[in-house]
Amino acid sequence: QVQLVESGGGLVQAGGSLRLSCAASIRGMYSFYVMGWYRQAPGKQRELVATITYGGSTNYADSVEGRFTISRDNAKKTVYLQMNSLKPEDTAVYYCNAHTSFGGNYDYWGQGTQVTVSS
Image (cartoon, rainbow, N blue to C red):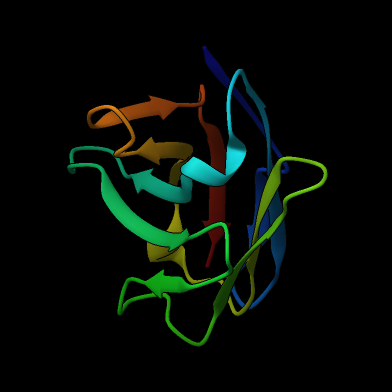
């Protein structure tokens, strides 16, 4: 059983910053999960933003590389997404994801948090 609760979205002007948080309630080993952030803009498919392993290895979409930073606090079972130099094209609903390949491929999603960047 995995529950993910995001927070931290909102409205910001272009060039500004936001920090998203995702608190995980996981029955089992948190270390088995790769945590990630995805986003979905209106009329577009959901896309990867960034992922991070338990050991701290990260992966970013080209569109956010150098502007966004993903991190995780394993003791708190929380993952963060620091978003700097925001652009209007970053406007989307951001979803937290927990993925594990232990015992099969499983993906769990949060409810999403809206990020709106005004020009």
